[in-house]
Structure formats: C-alpha cells, structure tokens
Amino acid sequence: MTQQDYYTILKVSNTASEREIKQAYKRLAMRYHPDRNQGNKKAEEQFKKIKQAYEVLSDEKKRTAYDQYGHAAFEQNGNNGDFHSSFTTSTSDLNDIFGDVFGDIFGNNRKKNTEKGSDLQYNINLTLEEAVQGTTKEIKIPTLSTCHSCSGKGTAHGKTSNTCTYCHGNGQIHMRKGFFSVQQTCPTCHGTGTVIKNPCKICYGQGRIKTSKKLSIKIPSGVDTNDRIRLNNEGESGRYGAQSGDLYIQINVKKHPIFSREDNHLHCEVPINFVTAALGGEIEVPTLQGRLKLKIPSETQSGKLLRIRGKGVKSVRKRYPGDLLCKIIVETPVNLNQSQKNLLHQLGKSFGDFRGKNNSPKSKRFFDSVKRFFENLTK
Image (cartoon, rainbow, N blue to C red; front, side, top):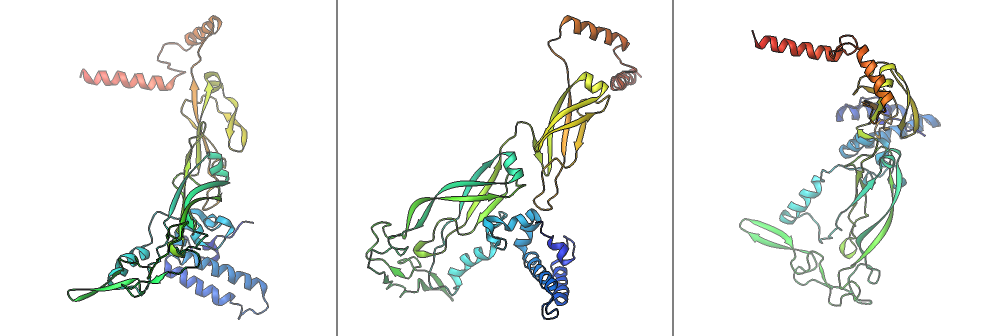
C-alpha cells in the first residue's frame, strides 16, 4: 500500500523551513489530538500519521534521507521507524566527533572507555535490473564477534577482572597542565577501569574473536551507484561487551550492454537502416519491462532522440518513473551485392548534384556556408 507523502500530511512544501514544519505540526496536532476527538478512530489514525511525519521532517538527518529516498529510507530489515537502518550520507556525526575529541580533555562524565566496535563497509555490485527493481542479497562478511567462551569479558572461565589500581577503576586519570586539570584515558587499563590477570584462552583477553557472518540485505528499488545503506550494530563487536559498530553497504551498478542511466531516465542507441529512416516505419525496442513498438517518423535524421514516457527508472523519493530516450543511429549499409549497388546508383542520380538541393537540406546549408566563407576571404 502506497504511503502518503510526509509533506502532504503536514500540509507544507518540501522546501518548508524547520519553523514552518513545527508550526504546521502544532496546528494539526491540536486539531486531531485524541483528547479532543474521543472515540473518533479516523482522527486518531490521522494524529499518528502527523506525529510520524513530524518525527522525520523535524530531524535533519532523517529529513535528508527522506528527501533522497522517500519511505524506502526506513524500510531496511522490515523496520519502518528506525533511521539507523536506513540510507545515509557520508557526513559524519559531528556530535560524536566533538564528544570524542573534547571528552578526554575536559571530561565527559564517562567513567570507562567502552570502545565501540569499528564500522565496516561492504561493496556490493548490482545489475541495472536489480538496482531498478530492487532485490535481496545474501552477503558474507569477515568481522570481530563477541567471544562466546567469556561472553566478551576477556577473562578465563570462573575468573573476574581486577580493578585498575592506577585509575582506581575510573578508566580516566586527571593530570595538571598549567592552570587546567586535564582528564585523560588511563594508560594502564585503556579506559576500561579493569585489568585482566587471567585472560580467556580463546580470545586471549580481547573479548572478541575473528569470524564471519551471513546477512540478508534488502536493496530497495531505484538505487544507484554511490548510494549507501547503513545497518545499525552490524559492524564489529565492541570490546568487553560494548556496542557494535555499523555496517555500510556501498552500492555499485554494473555497466549494462544496452542501457545507460541518468537520474531517473534510461538511454539507449537504436540502429535503423536508411530506408526506414527516410520512409518511416515501426520497429521493436527493448525496455526493462519487455519489448515495445516504436514508431519511426519519416525523414528521421541520425542522432534524433525519441522519448518513450514512463519506461525509465522509478524514483525512490517520489515513486514516479522516468523516461526511456532512444537515440536513433542511421546505419550505412554494408556488404552490398551488385544489384543493390545499381539501385543505389540510380537513387543517387535521381537526387541531382552532390549538394542535395532538394533531398539533403543539411548538405545544402553546409555547402552554402562553405561558399560564403571562401567568398568572404577573397573580399
């Protein structure tokens, strides 16, 4: 079932400012709030839609993903509300960056360095058909997973880790530098607050082991080269039970033998013989949905673009298809027999001189321009 556009739900344009979106939400929320419409199921459903639309459009990251990919940005793994399993841009989370940089210097109220797992990237190649129609891919990725022997703790069975005596279990130490008291990660326990005396024999105290895992990746229809899908917590496991990193699926669409893609439009070259080009006719052309009849107007010139509407790629954002643009290439005949050559000689004589005054208007214009050019040189 087609989902209603979030901008339409809030009755704002897709260029609306953050303030306009907030005002529209407040106005509609007051109108459809369940407390004001007790027993009205339609109002309750509309209120839910309004709330969902506002949650996306009021968040800068979610709105960017929605503007690019529409509802498909939130459909990965069947989760319609989790932005972390959606498409992302390459922009880093500035809050995380500043938190990591300044947290160690001025203190960020974290007692232990949890060492979140590393993000991973998997490059996946798709055919044009898979990218346009959508598909599901099974992938296998190497990663670091939580050690099952020690449950990620890094200690041998039945043993526990000891509190770090250098930082007294805080994971951080205070050092005085001039007028400032600087907080830094403890060099002994590396921010964990504990020291392992009896390490696990499987992971050697790391809490993680090298392994590989299989994932089923849902590729939404309409993706293109350089699009990325982010899967939350599918990267490397964090140390000592910390949060896992994310997995990024980098899309690359392989070159197609017939079609090339430009935004939502498809392009292809269609060769025809000069008889069809001169007299017109009907030919079969390929589309991603099957074969289609294309009418060739008479006196068609090589390079002419003929548009077949709606036979391009369906947009991920607005869900409407682009067009198929067929570039006509008039092909010069080869391997002619003597009879065919005689016919062409007769046809050529019927045209008159080589300037093609009546039958070749482009040739006439060209040679007229050449004549004027040399006349101007002799003036």
